[in-house]
Length: 254
Image 1 (cartoon, rainbow, N blue to C red):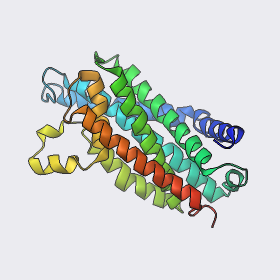
Image 2: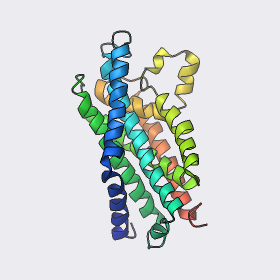
Image 3: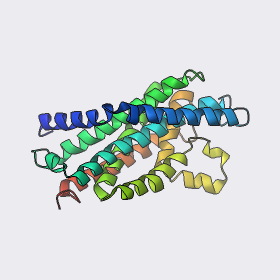
């Protein structure tokens, strides 16, 4: 990095931005996810077996945790950037001698921090409801880190592209929400008809959730190596896209 102090300052500012209002940015998503867990596990526990020998509630927990990671990482970087653009204080980020690489890392790392904190909170709270085995923590951590980085980079792209809050809301409601809810959070894709299985395999969020779940149960719909390769390729493409937008100053310097 060209400017360690500048990067550290921007990251600290982004960290404080969500941590100072943790009741809203961390506690509220935890409550929402916990409600999903209580409702779906109560209704479907005795009717659904996604993986042989795995209780439905246990199956549900990693999917909900990863969904929380993705949604909160996206929300952090996207909302920060759109607020800075609309209020005009983005100029205080652009004027200092910060490289576009420093900006990308600061925004994305802060987004990852929020997403991973919420995801970890979901896992810890879930222990009160179900015993959750951990077969391979390294696999789970790898997908959580890559997934949060992808969502943070997507949030950066959305924040750069959007000019109004309703445009950002449209991006989140019509792209991020469907991708997360239809990524196998509540079901195994093997339970779907062949056509919808094929559609699910086009969703990169599916590989993040499936690979993350593999770290707990040692079983998955797709081999974890395949999922990791796809998720890694998505991270590279999306982060490079965000880096390019920052470099050219798209809708930031014009």
